[in-house]
Length: 226
Image (cartoon, rainbow, N blue to C red; front, side, top):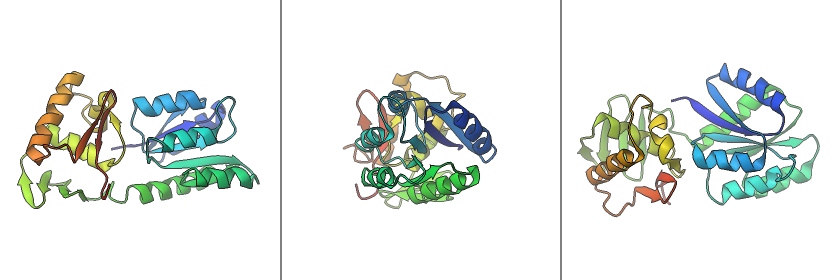
């Protein structure tokens, strides 16, 4: 599953440079030129991390970070003006995971981005993922709940894996199939709801403790300890 990053920055040239460099390193970059459109993109799509510029016209990056943290624990790497310690301190206090002063080299950005992704998703590329009593053998495509084997269809397995890999983060309903690597499957949003319902039944999740519905948006798998 490719790593997806959203760059919220009004500098189009920077987006072009980062999209090319990070793309060569297995990271797909999407672009939002201002804070409002960045927040809208996060509502509509699933990303693994956000690169967020502080200095933007209109809503600045600090306000955007505050609004992101009110809804999500997605990793945020803030891009700040060189030597502006105040922005860095405030950004970290608002919940940013790291910061990088401009100008910066793409190699350093890549290293810092990979570091925050590792901290946020230590099991994202593991062969076995465990969360909230659910154990997934990725290569064997086997699932156990509290040690009990659960038989899932291929699509149900892919949906569960996508949700667990992004535990604690909402995946919009219309983006869930893409996150599960099933872009070839032509189904309606209602059909996605039916598959999630079947998945809950098989997991014994009658009280929706594991897979929660975010009304009007999508689904989120409960984060360990939440």
